[in-house]
Length: 187
Image 1 (cartoon, rainbow, N blue to C red):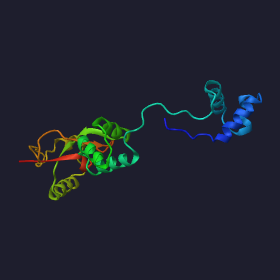
Image 2 (image 1 turned 30 degrees about the horizontal axis):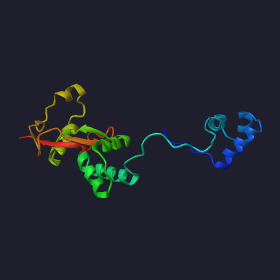
Image 3 (image 1 turned 180 degrees about the vertical axis):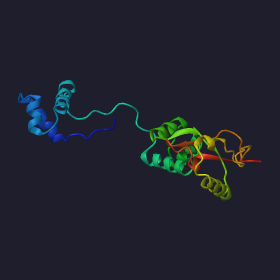
């Protein structure tokens, strides 16, 4: 859950003064226009800690500053096949030392997921035009008949470059974005 808006010191002091004047939560909340739960939390904080200021949040501070997060996101959006090691080196050049785990956590926090890149046939414009022409010539085909159609350029045999699984950082439903796919060709 995100951080909520905090009350000013003057409002907190007035809540405490009204409480010391033996007013109830409901009366204080109506008088100041704040929620009863907020009034109750401030009073309980006073009873427990003898202070009304907010205490520091638990947990370690983020290692990657907002500027570094923007740098990472810009690089990953431009080149989804960027590895965590490359991102660590980029941040090291800027002056921030982090681990690969920190990078992965940051990217997942920004709704990016490390997925295998889909292998898609590399179609030339002529192939696409031929597919469209055939589809327009046969508008009455049912889905059952279309499944039986075998396109002559669908035999995927050879990969470009390295023949191994490559991973990309992508958002949900961006599977077939050309930046997130690997082109393959037939022999």
